[in-house]
Image 1 (cartoon, rainbow, N blue to C red):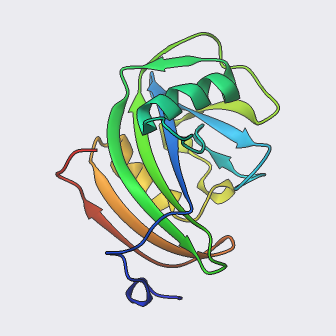
Image 2: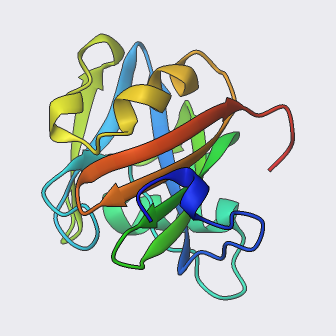
Image 3: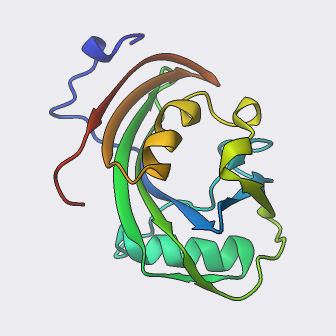
Length: 166
């Protein structure tokens, strides 16, 4: 399971459904230093696992409240990722962006907020795939990504434009 072709994507099921949210305002993006869970120690967008009975959009709002104490609104769907790890774990991630939120981004037990210029995103401190698809998201392009990782190392991927709906 080191290449995309090694996986039966038609029948693929994620271990966990999850979300990522990017608040973009005035040429800056709100990122987090992740303090717990998958990706601990990396910089990412806020987000997390979708709970039973919850839509990805509801999860995106809840996770921003839990991690940063802000309430996001007017979420724009950007795309989806299917991540498969060679160890067996898999995660299906819905990605959203917005300019709109209420509250002040505040550090929590899970995340420390970090505003950065969209021209100075610290990709070297992020997951390897982020430098490939985040620029598409920033341009307003929708995407569908499939990724294979061995721990932190990306082994293979496919990133396509998405003309569909969430």
